[in-house]
Image (cartoon, rainbow, N blue to C red):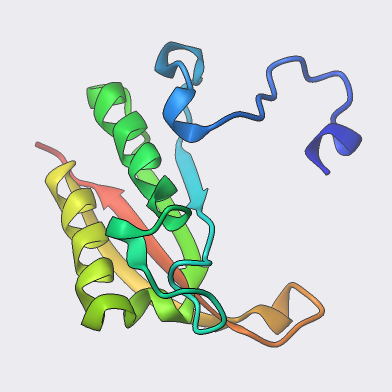
Length: 134
């Protein structure tokens, strides 16, 4: 979809998040992350964000933020399914927030029905993080 709207952009990369070269990622004010939900969704396998083969892509986002250090964005937004709050008895969500806290982000979370921006009604979880001054 991105390539359709921005056909002249030569910087768009489709690759495994763990293989991205951090030096090629430009500075931004807001970084967003949405990772596969199959390991968190009730319709999926519920393996979780730590042990799941798919949802563990979140840790690639963390790896990028860590590598960016002081140049990491001041604001981040992470989005996923409602099961993210409950998988592994809430431990998966707690660990994602703690990983972001460790990088200096104060986090808040809210739920929104996807019907507001897609043709389907499903609860979505949004986690916003703001980097504090150190």
